[in-house]
Length: 495
Image (cartoon, rainbow, N blue to C red; front, top):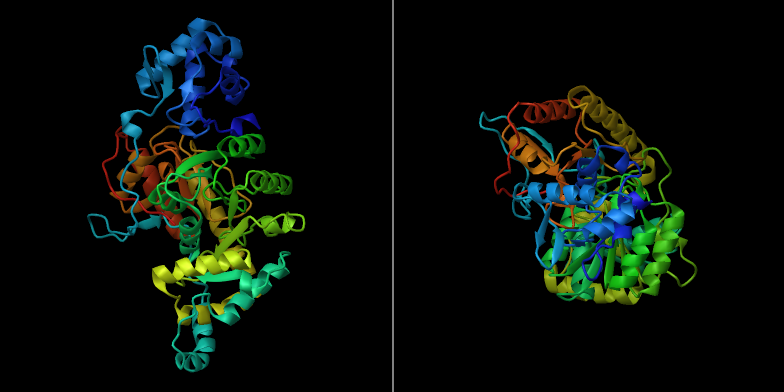
């Protein structure tokens, strides 16, 4: 669909017809130049038109949208005045963000927790993860305890992962429809380490990569740390636009593409099977490594859990696919167990990189993970029922305290991608922090820093009473009558 497209061309220019196609169909049915300016501003904030892209000339754009040149001139003037474009004589008009919506805070791995001035522990809405299921860790440790002494007689170094755990992960992939051998599995210290290892092995500084926009904030941090050039495929409330995705892949020929097709973080969108097939074919045609993040794939609340994306490929058609996952979202983030599923040769190369970084993973964590993984199909339904209840509680709280905000209820995942209606996300996050509420501001999830300033990611992973209290405080910060101002620098971290 046109309104889900992102434009980030190689020459950083958007044509008049391209821009016109992204606009809402009824844009000119509303009052003149202000409606046109608002529509273009929304495209910039949503990341569907990237920053630092040259807009079409006024006369050319007027012809494309069927408006007068005066209407387009007025819209451009309003965008300039509000800071969303800049113009320079002889070089055209370029997309920009106003100073108040620049990126806020360092992209640092700092805890979001903290206390308000009066000592209240607050409500942490920055972390999209739950505590461990009641009793599950105790049972897993009880199972592991008598087996640990035998392992403790060995040096304890298992760079590929415990053999039994590799087999269990491979068996689970096979049961889900993707035949997998243990030698195709590398056990890692969580999915974030898995992604960092893949990037470290396959990419060099300056390489082109493509991600969804918005996408998982910590994955973006890993790409920035590796000094990679990042292109974007927009994921809107309507999902993915595969025509633009295919075009972006053909034009940029990226080294790597990173996607979350299952209950995408932060939007919650689920990629349809036909789009998965097109993505597989497009990345294979451009020689692009396709990294599929399955961290949230099992959090299927309203639909059956999807099969692995690589399982849809014809025989031999998924050699370029790397699948990563973990137990953090289904079980507990404190149990640092993740994995990579790829070809056996690539797994060996990734393990060599891993050894240079941390030698091996925790034997105890992996041993505890074995009964949890083996029992997942039996234990997961109760976990999902709890999440459905909490999702309903979050929706009720939003309807009660902030009815002017909008959102779509996703078929799975752990959070809502909430539209505030105005670009104040970072400022609101700063003000809410003073009340003890920590929240994932939209800009943290954008490829272009400063975009998605009208969005918040709000997880439904806390108990209902804590969700209600968090949204009440958040709404109070939003409605306190004092205009939201640009936020000050402060580290923000989300998971």
